Length: 192
Image (cartoon, rainbow, N blue to C red; front, side, top):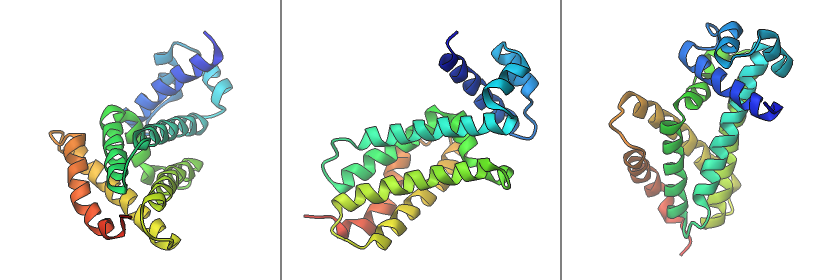
């Protein structure tokens, strides 16, 4: 199997084990067994359990960025872009539950380089939202755009956790809830 394909396979299995057991309880032995490789091979690819976790988080972050960026292509207004981006986010957390689980369990990772990776994921999404909204909204106040983006990211993280606890809430319904709350505050800045 080509190295890149094997690496994706290892990351996929590790993502599942970390999501099921948590980082502390997950073992490299179990991950290696599920992948069908030796434990030394895991270490050859990722150097350590934390290195494997970092690879999982980086993979999830890249997938989230791709999903949200692609979703807003061709948006015709700030409202349209926000709605499409939110829908992509809520669909991501539904479709990639294991990846989302890794991204939201940062409290167990404080003091590790994984905590920095998780914050980088938040910053990635915040920057994307601030840049996108800056292109649509009638403000040059970078502080306002950044604050707005931080608010969207933080609020949507909490809403996503609520959605996990209430599985009947679809990505579409979560998007509608978020838009009703968020768009009211942004609407007055929309360029005519």
